[in-house]
Length: 189
Length: 189
Image 1 (spheres, rainbow over the protein chains, first blue to last red):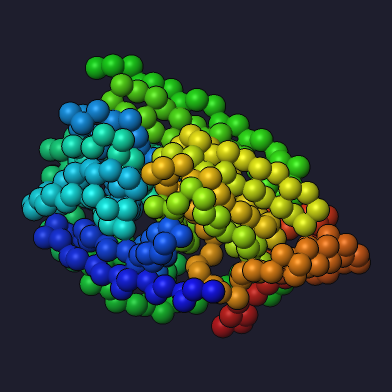
Image 2 (image 1 turned 60 degrees about the vertical axis):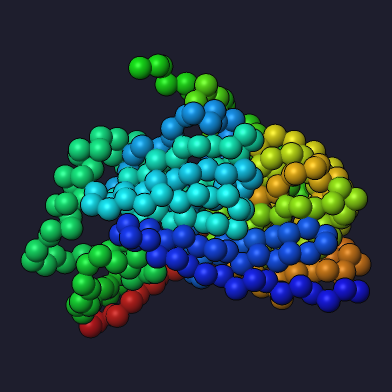
């Protein structure tokens, strides 16, 4: 029986683009095959409700070119390489995904573009939400305007949502203050 | 502007192995690249809390050879091909995953084996639970004994869980009867 190989340490690299992070995932290399893992909590800041694969993309093609209002995405080139550009309306950065253990987290309100698919490349996207056409922003001028508006919000608002990691992540750009509330179901029954 | 291509209809093929299903996922084929999608609800009967990739596996190698007590898995050969054998302790079936839009759902208490990885094959596994060594059954005799015990359960039990699609799927082998209950938080406060 061979010794159990131990995984490489995961790393997270911040981008200059708001909220965008490149995850170097834990990888276990072994003569019987290699494995890399993305787990909710340490790696994925959201529960996955949709997964899709993009393949057979001509190298000259440009894909993406939209932002999501609410949906988080986690992009991995599971084979081959893909170039991804992320843009928050102010700053822009380009990433080369060329190893299966690189995962790029694009939070909501990030404009994303993919190009330079290598021959045979497959892009895996893990998404926080089911498909919803209303969640897409397809016009870059609209996106820049909305991104600027959100970044410049003043004053306060009360938000009522379950206190979960993914909710806090979505509103990471805001300063949170908790308020007490009493919540009753079926009072007196 | 070209017409939007419409996705192929998804199909689900039941296996002779208890609870195991082969999903032919919706695929959108397009000159700009192809896409296939697995969404919680229509395709995935669980929320994804972990995703892993297996690659660089020598063709002669055999992987898997264990069952999970609670964890659901959804296997896809995102590139190349992989053979998967599923076994419920009584019946056994073999599947060839050789297209990216084939997803094999292995529910808990399914013994799974993968072999015949083609050159360059990458297997994607979407899992319902974080990694937990205690969830693994690694001895086939233990597995067969436990599978037989669960299949032969008589009598009733009361289960208190959120009534969600994935809970119903986990207990699909049982006949469910609902009972009423009153649930109060912070009564009188």
